[in-house]
Amino acid sequence: MTIKKKVLGAVFAGFILSGGTYGLFNDKVDSILSADSEKEKQEVVDEVDKHAPKNVIVMVGDGMGVGQLEIARLMEHGKDGQLFMESLENVALMHTYSANNFATDSAAAGTAIATGEKTNNESIGVDAEGNEVDSILDLYQDAGKKVGVISTNTVTDATPAAFTGSAANRWSGQEEIARQMLTNEYDVLLGGGASYFGPGKQNGKDLVEAFEDKGYSTVSTEEGLENVENTEKLLGLFSPSYMSYKTDRDELNSKEPSLQEMTDKAIEVLSNDKDGFFLMVEGARIDHAAHAGDATGVWKETIEFDQTVRQVVTWAEQRKDTLVVVLADHETMGMSATEPMNIEALKDIEVSPEYMAGKLIKDGETQTFTTESVKQVFKEYADIELSDEEVQEFLSNVKNNDGDVYAAYRVGWEIGSVIASHYHVGVVDTDTRAASSTGGHTGNMVPVFATGAGSDDFEGVLDNTEIMEKIANSAKFKAKLAKENSKGK
Image 1 (cartoon, one colour):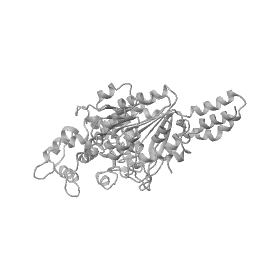
Image 2 (cartoon, one colour):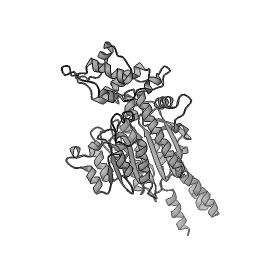
Image 3 (cartoon, helix red, strand yellow):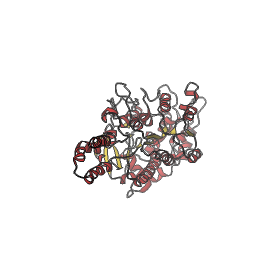
Image 4 (cartoon, helix red, strand yellow):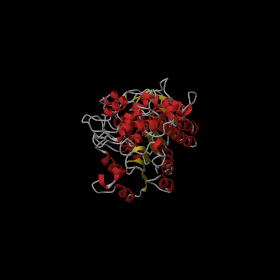
């Protein structure tokens, strides 16, 4: 069953209601129509409007479980401090399992959140039988509202892809997702993944030029994004692959915008539409840092995400017509703030484990890293002195079953695991991660925070398929009311 069927068919009059308002649709329409005075009618309509968001902003901290939040809170604010998202008035917990695994991956989790349908791990925008399903983005676009997605991942992978397209497999389908984005003409697309839009992966066709032919402004740098003005459609691709970790941007002399800057520009473009908009914002690299057990990276990425939540909520509070939902798609690596965790040592680390991996030197004969470079990298960047035995164990862990050294990001996972162990971060060990098809995801419940119009529906223990149903359970209320009122004239 598609999300359109779940919300009672096609969109009417461009008006989309939250789950609480759907209840009001059933309970209040008759009382409005039979009210004795216009004042009484207006009082009930006002009650409905209070729960009916004109704009919806869903913010996804990928891999951001309770442990990640606690690590970020302690490292940024101390034990008496608070993350901004923790101040939102409505709070729930959410189950995340996929159709074929109690530990979901980001593709299946994103699909459940975006469409209300469970699917198998690695599937995007399809149900468990492989049938394409519509996302909330489609529903809002059909309603005449503007729509957009932002991610610090590639815009064609996992969470953003689940909102914008369908593919049987997340790993082989990113080129197709890029083509679907072009066909569907979503209003704002911002993030990484430029390589998937280029001629090399599009059979010689430059999709960026194709977007420009359709009237999009296109940008590739922080400065370019800042200078965009008076545009209706915006494509920003700021990296060939993932956008850089926050910890690495200075070292890399990054020209990429921050998550806050992308979100600010997206809202600027989308809010020009009088009918409202839907925006998905993903802080994707929380998950990537967690895969490495990288508490420092989790801290920095989560704080950037939390600051973006503050920015969005501050904007929404000035309008009173916007629902903001903040959640994770799943938890990664069972991270926790253990009592002996060395917070000060972790705060002194200034680059990601992936960046450290790039500084290792390979031995030409053995095709693995030299002992000297391994010791030097751990000492320079993490203040850890490894023994010869620890170096050999590390060198064993960075090879696959064929004896080949992993790609830099996977080497980074192993560097991060050594650092996590040394500084007592609570995290799944490297053997358990290696045995996991998701690279270390868990089945732990994750938090949901909400504020604004309709946010009181987000309470209790939820399933990930309920999120979009609560946002879009009915599109009929005002249309039916207008129709019935016209009959009485």
